[in-house]
Image 1: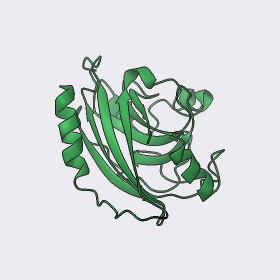
Image 2 (image 1 turned 90 degrees about the horizontal axis):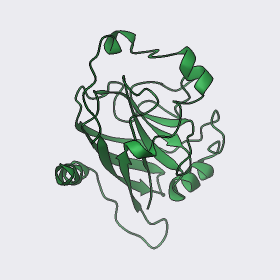
Image 3 (image 1 turned 120 degrees about the vertical axis):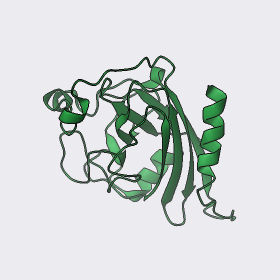
Image 4 (image 1 turned 90 degrees about the vertical axis):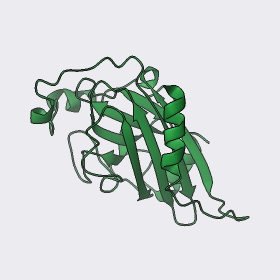
Amino acid sequence: MKKSIIISSILCASTINVYADSMTNQPMILKAQLDRAQVTHPLDKASDASKAAHPFYKKFCKNKTAMPYKNAHGEAILFFNPTTNTVQYALAYQDLSGPPIMAHFHIGKIGQGGPIYQTICGHPPPGNQALGYSASKAASSMKCPLTRSGFMVGEFKIKANQHVSGVDTINKVRQALIDGKLYFNIHTCLNEAGEIRGQVIR
């Protein structure tokens, strides 16, 4: 099972353009391993999350039957081009309890939760939302895949997020990415706070 997702992730990543190396502003390859053990936090702020259970997915999540998910996991590869401040990623996930309802890049150190920085799929869009603030529109799609196992491929340009502490300038976002302070988080109906998480590391 694990081998299949590794192979799938590599194949998925092959659709990403790899930038040529240079002596300065050299592109970086980063990665992430997602699993249940790394999930440590409420969606954004506990008070907001508790007031807005399934705020955008009430009908979708109603009467959904969760499948066994003890083996839920994922893998991602990313390419960061510091010249253009562009991040491209390919994410493969497998054996969730149900389809993802949202996926995000969050700001936070290993073992610590943090706010949403960039939406991958689902909500929130940019702006003031109960669940957090996305720097820009969903990087993959507003609609997440409708399967328990699947792929997400996308691209976003690093932007300052004035609503999120520590990433209010482009340089701070770049440094957070390089220092391993961004992580993937995939949310499901059963686990709104996040079902699998993975730190982005070099």
